[in-house]
Image (cartoon, rainbow, N blue to C red; front, side, top):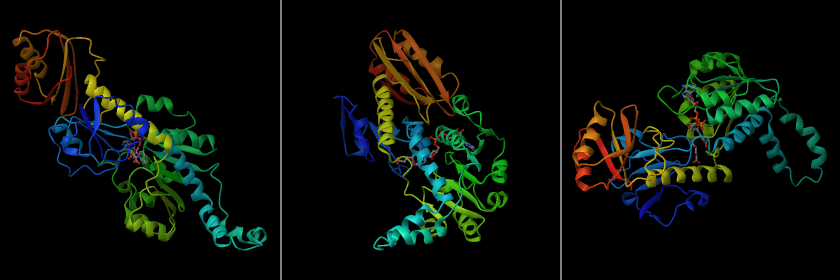
Length: 387
Ligand SMILES: NC(=O)c1ccc[n+]([C@@H]2O[C@H](COP(=O)([O-])OP(=O)(O)OC[C@H]3O[C@@H](n4cnc5c(N)ncnc54)[C@H](O)[C@@H]3O)[C@@H](O)[C@H]2O)c1
Ligand SMILES: O=C(O)CC[C@@H](O)C(=O)O
């Protein structure tokens, strides 16, 4: 029985896809597979039972990827599965920042007992007037699943869209509308755009990319949207820019105690992916990835091990090996199999950074001796008999 622990509530549309070979446990220590959304895993002890973690979502900064790789724990995410949910909220954020919809709505709430509200509102409404987004320049930093959807949708709304992503994937580039102007530096976006939205992962390179120096390059009255991660923006510098009016509005899905109190902030409580559709999509994809890994040893959409897929095993045995990406590993693995008098009928080995992964199909049943021999090879992290 494969034990699954959910560290956050996960949509039943996904979890119902587990078959009778799986059972849920509340005990993280005994789990073989973990499903997680935003729960912080950095301080959690990883037990030897743990084979895989699936993040039902995109961002993985809550998961210790290297610590997991070092223990042979494969971490997955669900690229694109919640992108439409975030796209819609970002478009909403741009509209909320352009017109005082929130102020107008509060006014109606405060005046709801006024019998003549239909008349008094005609005088009050001038306080909530704003601008249209058509014709304005939008800069999108990060043209992945979310950024590309926003860039394309904004062109449809009549915005002039600038996109920046030095690592854009081939698929990402194909997805992008030809209307989007591709720029080669963030500075072009900072200098040119009326709205700037960030959609990169939180990495050393992107941490606090919005700060006093980059804000200084921007137009007066710029609107900044952050539906990616709190630490992409320097809070103190943003608060100063909001106070001075340099930044007209900061729309964020990641308020903290400082930002929630700041002037001209429009904040939502990390709601980007909180739609039924996104939650279902992420859960279905995460469960599919976990099942394929547990049942076939295949790795699709991992963020700490390479993509490695040998389909469904139709041979006698399949074993998988998580190992360090060092010389002569394939030679040593095949020698260990040959020394047991066994034949490899199919094999794939892929690497990613410091780690690598091998799937081997054998014509005869894997033995405890073979597993021991492979485990003894220096650089081998985890060996698993899948079938
Ligand atoms: N608010 C929410 O609920 C919510 C939901 C989903 C994702 N997110 C956040 O949004 C981020 C993006 O999500 P996604 O699904 O689009 O991910 P993605 O991996 O599809 O896209 C990220 C893009 O950022 C680009 N990138 C990386 N470093 C960059 C840099 N220095 N400058 C410019 N571009 C860079 C990558 O090339 C990639 O194209 C996630 O990492 C996550 O933190 C938030
Ligand atoms: O699970 C969530 O609610 C948030 C997901 C989001 O932050 C992500 O990175 O995918």
